[in-house]
Amino acid sequence: MAGTAALGQGLSTGSGFRRRRRIFRPELFLRGMSAGYVGLLIVLPIVAVSVRALGGGLGRIWSDLARPEALFSIELTFLIALLMIAVNSVMGTLTAWVLVRHRFPLRSVVNALIDLPFAVPTVVTGLMLVTLYGPRSAVGSFLSERGIEIVYAKPGIVLALLFVTFPFVVRAVQPVLMEMEPEMEEAAATLGAGRLTIFARVVIPSITPAVLTGAAQAFSRAIGEFGSVIVVAGNIPMKTQVAPVYIYGEIESYNPRGALGISVVLLLGSLAILVILNLIQRWGRRQDVRG
Image 1 (cartoon, rainbow, N blue to C red):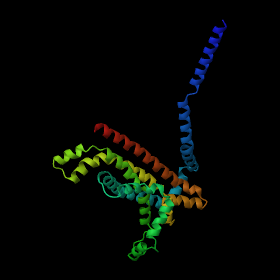
Image 2 (image 1 turned 135 degrees about the vertical axis):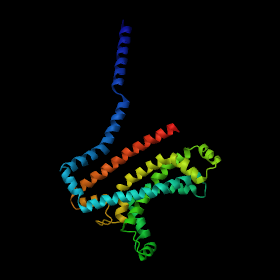
Image 3 (image 1 turned 90 degrees about the horizontal axis):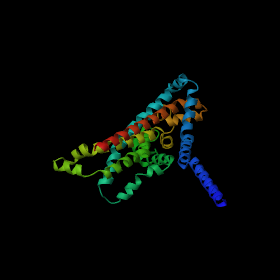
C-alpha cells in the first residue's frame, strides 16, 4: 500500500511538472520579447511623432510644409536622392560585375573597401570631402577658378550621398551575379550574341530585382542623411538646406512644431520605400520560380 501511494504521488508530481512545462512555452516568450523590443525601439517613436504632428490638425502640418524653406528642403532632398540613385545604380552594378566576373590584382582589397562607407562616421565623410574639395585645397581652388563650387553647394551634397550609399547596390547585386548559372550566357554566345547583347538581354533581367532593392535602400538612406551633408554643404536656407538639416535647424531654433511636418513627410517616404522593397522582393521570388 505504501509503495502504491508513493507511486501515485510520483505520478501526480510528474504530471504537475508537465503541466507547468506546458504553461511556460519558450517560443511564446521569445516571440513576446522580440515583439516588445521592436515595439519599444521602432513602433513607439513612430507613434509618438505621428500623434504629436497630428495634434494640431492637418491644417497646421500643411502650413508648416507650405513655408518656402520647407518646400525647398523637401524638393532638394528628393531630387538629389533620385540623382544619387541614377548614378549609384549604374556604377554599383558595374562594380559588382567587375568584382564577380573579373580577376585582377588587389581585388580583395577593392572588395573590402566597398563596405568602408558603412564603417566611417558620416561626419568624418563630410570632413574628408571638405578636405579634398574645400576652397583651401588644391582641387577646390582649381575648380573654384573655373566657377565650379563643391563645398557649400549642391554638388557637395551629391558627392556625400554617393559616398554613404554606394555599397547598397553593390552588395545587393553581387550575390545574385555569383549565383547566376553560366549556361544561359553560354547559350546566347553560341547563338552569336555579343557581350553587350548578352549583358543587356540575359544579365540585366536577372539582376533587375537586386538593383531595384539596392536602389530603394540607398534612397531611404539618402533622404535621412545628416552628418556628412551638414559638414560638406552647411545649413544655408534656399540653397543647400536638405530636409534633415531643416529639421535640425527648427529644433535648434526652439520650434519643434515646425520640424514635425517634414518629419512626417520623411517618415511616409521611408514607409513607402519599405512597401516598395517588399513588392520588389516578391517580384524577384516570382521571377526565380519561373526561371
